[in-house]
Length: 104
Image (cartoon, rainbow, N blue to C red; front, side, top):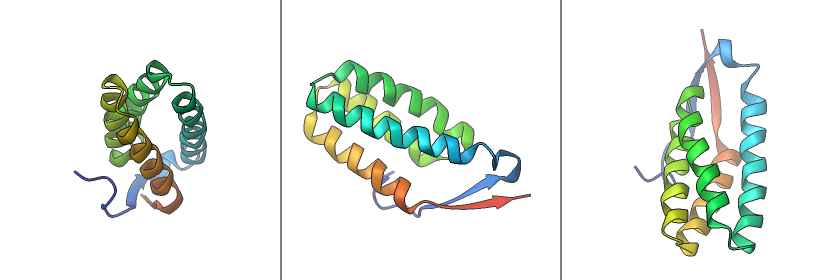
């Protein structure tokens, strides 16, 4: 799946509504941390964040975040700076445009 071109509507169980703003804010903090890590050439840091994101995204209903986590983890392991920049930018754009619909 190309996470840059997908529909950004996500359907989330309303029982998670109180948790979602904090979850998304933490992903924004991850972007700041990964940007710093890119500048510091700290691939291990990005790989770790990507791994955590890969595990957490689906649990909250954000499959795209899981996909970005996998992409970040793989690119960091491969020290692929260009792919890392694309993935960080894509994640940032996704967070800016995601449309959340809470379901009963």
